[in-house]
Image (tube, rainbow, N blue to C red; front, side, top):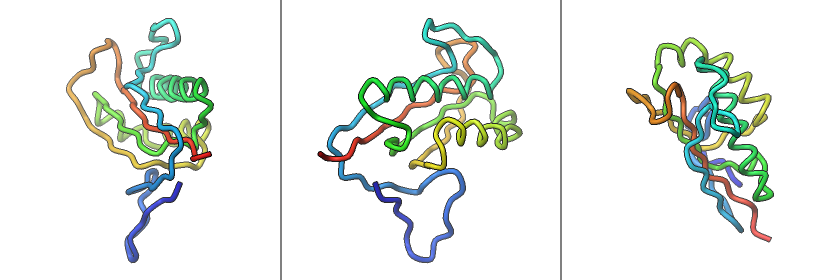
Length: 132
């Protein structure tokens, strides 16, 4: 996996502009919300839901033999822009605890609502295992 950064560009903080992968197996993870394995929200707050959604992604990747560092793309859909902006430091700490210092190509999209209530954030990911 190679992070792509054009010459002279300032490095982004908390994500990569692009990642190149020589992949052997690609895993597409559907949008994960902040509910547990029984599809129950244990919190209505953004940060705990973000943490649970990341945990869900890590668990799904594990079933394919993948780890967080194999994530090459992630898209986040969030219903609460002011809360997201206020919680960036907390969200970053959660990210580093669960994913480490690996930052894939990412997009953040703010939406009016999510299908699963009382979801505040939904994360979808693409991971690539190295070619054998």
